[in-house]
Amino acid sequence: QVQLVESGGGLVQPGGSLRLSCTVSGTFFGIYYMAWYRQVPEKQRGLVARITTSGTANYTDSVKGRFTVSRDNAKNTMYLQMNSLKPEDTAVYYCNAVIWASRGQSEYWGQGTQVIVSS
Image (cartoon, rainbow, N blue to C red):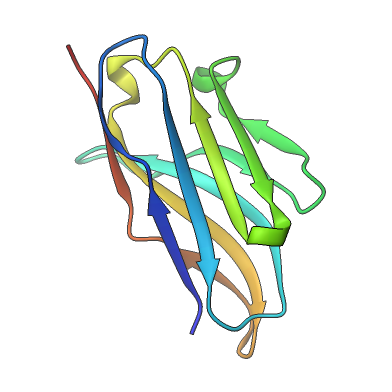
């Protein structure tokens, strides 16, 4: 069974930094792209950043220059380094990945990690 587990959320002051991690565990054959999404109450989940197997990354405009997504393929782990955090970055952050496993190619989600940016 494939699982995505996030960690690294928490409370941080405006201007501060946090690093989120997402590790894929279980039995699978390969991981295609990985991504971070975020969601605030009563709004749709939105893409924050996406990274391919080769490391090509893209970002939503509001985080460009502040967030950096990376992945360690040997550890099946993706990271999101968040700098210069703003109150509007407050959200639940979800890890997302397209993975090739026994049931074929499927999309998986983590359970989410809360990020609160507040003074």
